[in-house]
Image 1 (cartoon, rainbow, N blue to C red):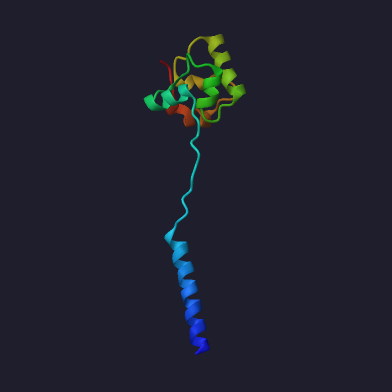
Image 2 (cartoon, rainbow, N blue to C red):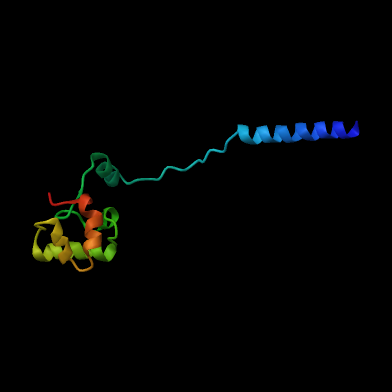
Length: 111
C-alpha cells in the first residue's frame, strides 16, 4: 500500500510539473531598435542613395562594406572629377572593388 500511495503521489507531482512547464511557453521580448528619421524615410520610400548628392555620413550608414574612409574617398572623388556618370564609375574610387560594388548596386542611384 505504501508503494502505491508513493507512486500515485510522485505521478501526480511529475504530471503537474510537466503540464505547468508546457502550458506557459516563454515569449521573447525584444526592444525596438531606434531608427533615424532620414534612414526611416529612405527605407519607407524605397529610395536609393544618390552618389552625386549623398554626404560621407549617409554613404557610410547606407552602403554595405563602406566605412568612414571609403565614404570620404567617394565624396573626394566626386569633388575632384565631377558627378558620377555611371554606377560602375565607383570602381575608380580607391578602396571600392567589384565585391563592394555588387553588394550595393541596388542601393545606389545617380539621380
